[in-house]
Image 1 (cartoon, rainbow, N blue to C red):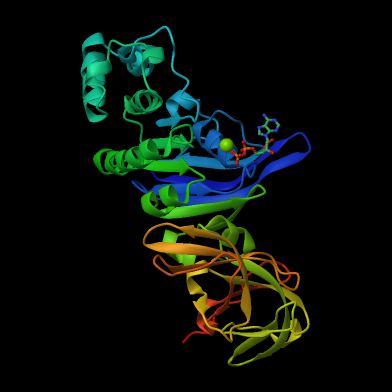
Image 2 (cartoon, protein in one colour):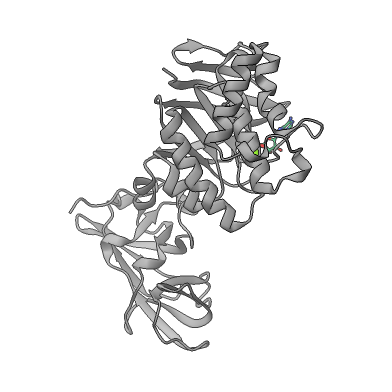
Length: 363
Ligand SMILES: Nc1ncnc2c1ncn2[C@@H]1O[C@H](COP(=O)(O)OP(=O)(O)O)[C@@H](O)[C@H]1O
Ligand SMILES: [Mg+2]
């Protein structure tokens, strides 16, 4: 069984630590999505799992075996890269068969495996073509076929769809869901795409600046980001984050003050010592409710209609950033119009000066 475990896994390039000691356990057959801003160490983590990079410290175990010093080809792991990295002089069949050729598998067995994988990825009609005669989506399917032809226990995918157009991304997203069901292998998938992460993942790992910030089910991270890095990473449009000062805190919650003086109630457990400290108020766009007397508002600078719903971008007021609010799709709005919103105390998030979320008051 291909359980993947890392313990204290660390990577430094010279003086720069790009992966701080990381611990993570991924169950057999899980689909884990890794998210985080560019440069936060996602590819480095995958390359360490694949054995393409030597760790500075820590251990990697796959299927219960310590593989920290095992060669990439011996780990039962395959990796799909953002750049498909196909061999231009080989046909599709030759590309898919390549790992079997290297492993010196018998020709007959190799041909059977290539045929089966080509079938699964709808490539049978293309087996004699060369990569340059394929579309982007077809090339990516070939690179996936090549990765799974040796039936890896663990499939690592590093932003595999980021070079494809949006319609193809949606189709390939469905392909990955199907492939995961079909193969039952453990998948670790890096993406920037919110929809890919939310729909494909059993669990999401959020990274920032070389650290794992939070690990959890997509909706758990969406509902309760543990800190600002996770609040920024999960959700599109992103959570509104507004600078506030903590004014009062008691057993029933806290009161914070916006830069322009308006007070907002939050159902969060805030210690008395935090009164007077700066903090960050977080509100998802769908939690802002139209309320003429509400504390949030401004002139509509941009209005996006998506069909079933719309997003109003409100201009800065009193030094706060732009606020994005979700509205019904058919709501009439004129540019420049002033809209005001309120938030229910239980829907607001509060992050302390250290970026960590104050825990919610249990209802
Ligand atoms: N071979 C290398 N030598 C030096 N620095 C590197 C090397 N590979 C990656 N880095 C640095 O490590 C950090 C993390 O990179 P990477 O894992 O590629 O991030 P991500 O995939 O999240 O965008 C970046 O700052 C990058 O510049
Ligand atoms: Mg990367």
